[in-house]
Image 1 (spheres, rainbow, N blue to C red):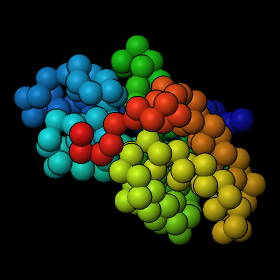
Image 2 (image 1 turned 60 degrees about the vertical axis):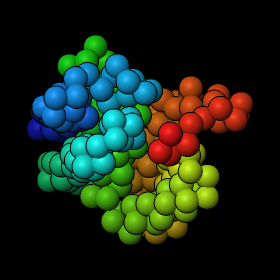
Image 3 (image 1 turned 180 degrees about the horizontal axis):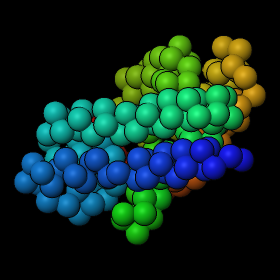
Image 4 (image 1 turned 45 degrees about the vertical axis):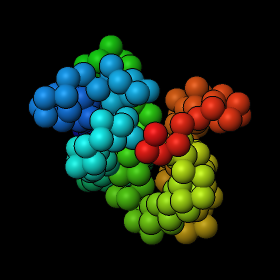
Length: 195
């Protein structure tokens, strides 16, 4: 691994660690987003403030972190760089150095990674998310379904091995981070979108 790639991985992790949900809600006078709802710093929890614009901004910037990391990785080391830097950005969001390694669920950042690496695959996964959300009205079920489908989708799209590994690794991380949501889903206690 070259020094340039190591530097790119570190930069991608630090980008992923930027807690946009927390920064946006604080700048808007809403205080610490971690004190409401699920305590997460992501767009779904920001939406629980009733401020759809802030939730949309959080989604955009969290996804942009993933896009930027993939572009950096591709520039520095091609496909292996995409794998390393995309994964670093997601890990940064999940375990941000700035917040004592307690971050969000990583869905938007994972989407950004996939969007930059394989736009068509990202579009298909977004459609899966929307279809499950429309059917169940449960954000976590939508996220879990889309991330579970992502490795299969990128494989069907003819992606190289690095991207398939990246999609699979992100799916494992996101499912692990959703462990509490999975327990609530199994118990029929997961809140629906808008509640």
